[in-house]
Length: 215
Ligand SMILES: C[S@@+](CC[C@H](N)C(=O)[O-])C[C@H]1O[C@@H](n2cnc3c(N)ncnc32)[C@H](O)[C@@H]1O
Image 1 (cartoon, helix red, strand yellow):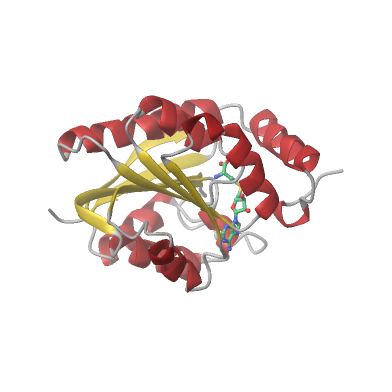
Image 2 (tube, protein in one colour):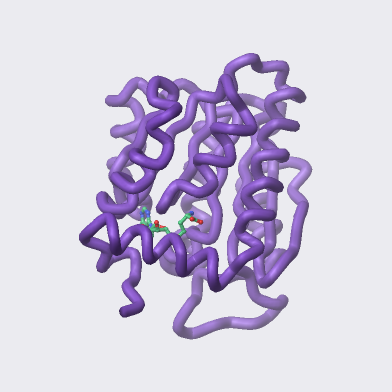
């Protein structure tokens, strides 16, 4: 049975979901490494010894694991809607316990911003990253809202990175309005005041777009 992230109830469901994503998009491992390198580069650029990184929609924790390995002093916060996937991630990265925090929240609501503060994770982030997820929030308004909120959570010069499934310019998918073109993502980043917005990778239907908070 092909379950959506809303239908995952057991750890076996979570495992099958994680495996299905990687079977359908084997390039996800390459994308994780690419994102980790972007964050390493940002941490070097910002001269921080302990980068603070937020992942939106961490799902089964594949990117979290790659980040924690690539950045041994990183403090990581992951947010996701699914308690089942968060438990899967907690077990997956428990080796790094002490520098991880996982938060269950709906990113389309505002409570996650307060939750960050409650958990004392409200200190600004050097990087905010997300993979294969923002299209699931709805359409362009939901994606744009996240771009705007993320801007308030970054240190000056901090990195926002979204690696998501994209469409060709001008294409609209009525059943999947959150899939935007790289050009639209870059335009949204610029509208929200990010600088140096550009695409760093296109592979297998994914586009990775980045922007920086002005220094
Ligand atoms: C396709 S999965 C990708 C997961 C992970 N980023 C990865 O690439 O392995 C999409 C993720 O977005 C999460 N998600 C969808 N809508 C959400 C929302 N409104 N708030 C928070 N998380 C959400 C789902 O629970 C799921 O984990």
